[in-house]
Length: 248
Ligand code: ADE
Image (tube, rainbow, N blue to C red):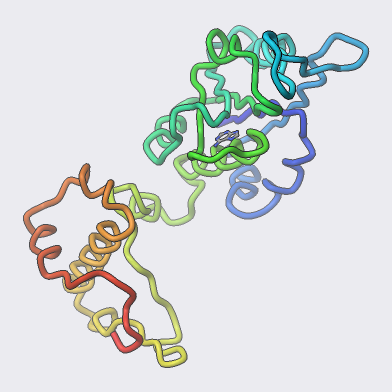
């Protein structure tokens, strides 16, 4: 899969993809991330990418021409979708990340300043995407989030096959808690059940903890969760959720 990012700050991406899972995926040839400087698609002497808003207001608005030129040049006649990153967009989530991973290529347009000329979202971009209900100084950090989250759905990018399917949200609820050595740390013990060797018991415990954590942290997810009769039974056993005591 290929990601094309259009930005006025290409240097912001210089190190962010140069480590970790994304870098390995690039090295393995599973993904490509190309960053394009929007100013390279301007035609004027000053390489101007923004202008004052019609109707008057504070701040500057990103001009449509360089953005259209950049996307059209990258598409080269293909119908690869382009997405404008903005706080006004559709909320980017697990499901959308999985959906986007089906495209051979996506183009990400990073907005800046007070906004982007509306003709970009109306006539050029497939959709506007927001990574959350807060305003970033620009779409660049959001583009990094999209590349990272979408890449995880490309087969081979995440090491162990099972781990994406087990992630938080994959099964509609949050992930279960994880523990590793030492078995006891400053008096805080890893749960006894994990040493029982009984895989059925361990799975039931993990499912119960995932359900408890989801009810506590994200009750909104519980409403849409597909709960089995066994899940309902596990939830009924749950005591008031809270911080685990050191000895539990
Ligand atoms: N640009 C500014 N804020 C943003 C957000 N929340 N998501 C995506 N792009 C943005």
